[in-house]
Image (cartoon, rainbow, N blue to C red):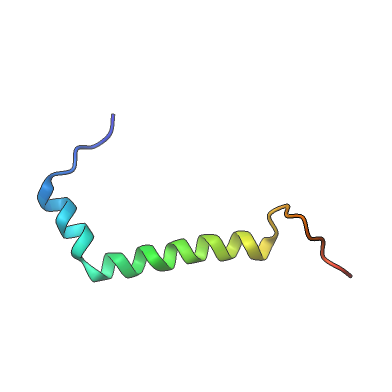
Length: 47
């Protein structure tokens, strides 16, 4: 079951700049790691 989030927790998480920055960096890391390692795209690396 999903954990119930209270209204206070939701506003705290949304307004906390440290959590926002951490989430932003984490998303960028995930995206860049996928792109850097290759994700089976249409372009092939020329060697």
